Image (cartoon, rainbow, N blue to C red; front, top):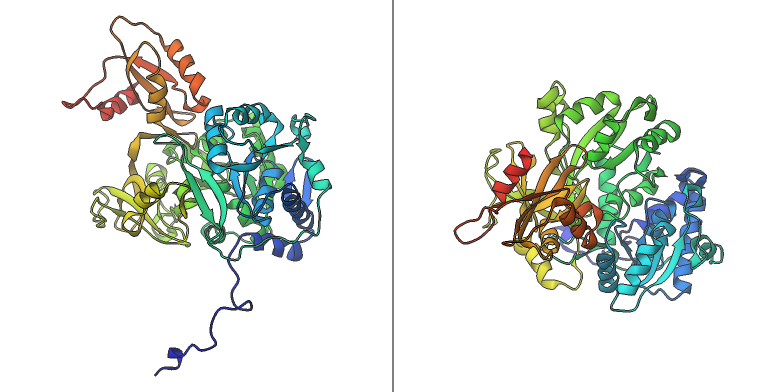
Length: 542
């Protein structure tokens, strides 16, 4: 018998096993980088010692007002320090963080608060009207509101609710963090964009959050003390886990509340930003910024972009400006980025123009924390890696969600066959690189935000003059894609474009509202199904 056959005394114990959690990164950073700048937001500048203290006070304050382990704490916050602190402070009291998209409409926010059974809601004062209206619309018990002021950026306290800084000031700075006993415990709850009706609650565990954050350090080839600009909303896949990543390498988190070209250039020039993530719309914004909005800088900024491949013209213009762009791909269900277009210098350094852009537009290969990313057909067989055959992107590994909250059927369907089914159609090249060719379920990706055509169509169909409505993506120079509605009116009814758009805006968030309405008879199959492929072709020609 080989010696490893006998493992007597080799079990897990406190000395050799600690559940993985990204919270450990901030505990370490407090000791290793105590005086290094951790968070910057205008005059708000906190070291890791101060960052850790504020997070501890937040955890203490939440526990003091009745938040118990397993409870949900929601937020309606832009990219400000409180949003970053919540990523550590909420789980440090044993609760689950639910960061809500500030661009959503009242009814969707109300649904999320109800479905999540949120106990507390941290709200930036800019979004208090949205929060109050959502709470009044809820069917269940509304969460307690804590308002977060940002006076340096024009959003002072209202005095109508307990204010965040007051809450922290009265909290216990010696509060003992409640770390997970099991790394499978939930750390965050994120909601999808509702591509098939109500949004689904995607549950993350501590293990996945830790491994995603650590794995992206490798993918981004980061060294100590990067300076990261928060362009990806912290409510979107928890900012792609980048907030949890920063303490691991003593990085500085530079908050960007309002995403504008001047704010980005100023942060790069003044704070020395080295990394940021964002949708291609951000790249277009920088490329098209007038000279008066630009600032000079003398270093290369590393950029992760996702949502849609950047246009070749954009890549050709932005890289000489000092940005190195890497395409990544993922979904809410996989903690944000799951694949990367890892650049092969030996093969591709000599490429220029459209050839270079074509490679950069690929979604690439699995990031280090995922076990396997592949493309399969409907029988769960891998497609030929010939760059032509199409299938669905499938993902397996520790970077996949626990499942959908209170929806076991949807969870089982998503995990059928032992892989997460992305719903995205792709080819796979001979070098294993994945490339999306189409989007399942007619999802429109506008400025990095997913829009359900089904949801928009459902709103349009409530207009008294509308017989049928179909919504598809129309290419847009600024946003990448925008919703374009094709409407078939009832016999004898009348309506114009402005009326339809105004009607849609009453029931949808602004970014989901159609930007163009075309009135015509909709093309249909013999069984009455609307031929969206024909409408997509028509939309591209508008």
